[in-house]
Amino acid sequence: MRKRSRTSLDTAIVDVWKREVGELSTRNFSHRLGASEDLVLRLELLRKLEKHRGCVNAVSFNADGEILVSGSDDRRVTLWDWQMGRVKLSFHSGHSNNVFQAKIMPYTEDRTIVTCAADGQVRRAQIPERGQVETKLLGKHQGRVHKLAIEPGSPYIFYTCGEDGVVQHFDLRTGAARELFTCYSVDDTSRIPINLYTIAIDPRNPNMFVVAGSDAYARLYDIRKHQWDGSADLDQPTDYFCPPHLIGDEYVGITGLAFSNYSELLVSYNDESIYLFTRDMGLGSNPTSASLTSIDSEMKADQNSDDSAADADAKVGPQVYKGHKNCKTVKGVNFFGPKCEYVVSGSDCGRIFIWKKKGGELVRVMEADEQVVNCIECHPHTTLLASSGLEHDIKIWTPKAIERAVMPVDIEKLKPKARAWMYHMASPEDLMWQLVSLQRPRTIPEHGGESLSAGRELLEFLLTYGANSDGSSEDGGDRPSAEDHFN
Image (cartoon, rainbow, N blue to C red; front, side, top):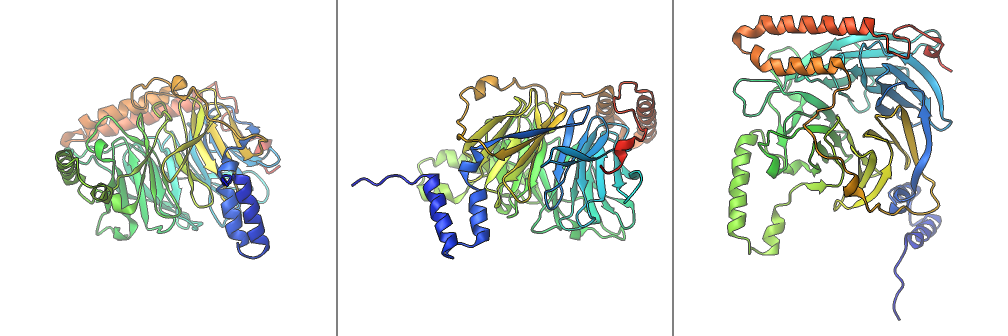
């Protein structure tokens, strides 16, 4: 007699029975349920959180997942009770340009928020018991700052990276910024800084962090190599990560990084794919020599194409995730599921893409924005996603659909055509930053110090003038309002 194939419902019933008789712990039962593909296929829009008056560039949950914090082009930071769909607090960030990242520091009773923005500033907002929110400038980059990373479990320590190529370390106990190092091109003898767009810290080993930007390499650093008395420097990465076919490619960059709970590294490339690396896939401390080794290995592989399957499996490359499009904006990437069973990303076609981490199978595509989805944040304890993009709202997704979703048939048809790397300019200030970046190669060599300094002073003046004379801001500029208090 032919056996009937087991469905997800059958598996769920068996798991419930095992939990009831003590063969499956409540924790493992919860993890199995949370990682169920059935739940992923039932994700549906729960609600939209509408308050911002500009693109929402940052979404992040607090440690227990009850509060969602967001930052926007309107320069405001908003704390949400996402379950009720209401604003708990909204205040002006103190930034003079688009807010790119806003995070709640752990173990601060959700009263300390750190932000970074297109004005290059890094700020702290302190929420008092009563009265208005106070913001303070902690440090500044000479260029836009897209991301910051909080040391896991620390209420004080976080890092930032900017388009000036600089990585900074912040300790809220001192309130001071410490410049760790400047990130330079791998094989450029002129020592030109690369633009950095993203940074992530390994949750299993907070001493290790990775940065990436306008070239093909994700660079891994060990903070223990830094001597705080200034006697040594940290500018030499411990390891580099890059897919073999992109080594030395001058036309790609990296917009998103994420570590899993198992120290796996996700790297999202512009106008390319997403790759998953394990620690043993690094290129070592000299990616140039690794490039030559890779080319030699490929030539030998071509000459010995009839080798056994065992030999072919001996060298495994990074897992790849395909289907989305990333060429317009700085997009993040993330893991999803209680044990990081899935990979999630936004796309230029306005959709959310979800792949199985193991094998790279695309299992879900969801319409989420009229234009572009940039940010996807996963709830820390349950099967829930928050997404944002060029629209002015935040969308909350939960597995409440009655029917399982099916894969759209027009994914390739609706993917936008590739354009130049990071062509999108959100404002005249963005264009000015890009012009300064283009001028940097001419002014950094020996006699260019005065020119670079003068250019920065002019740029800061223009940005200040633009911020002070901007009549288009719908939030009323820097003026405090009743919204700057808890609701």
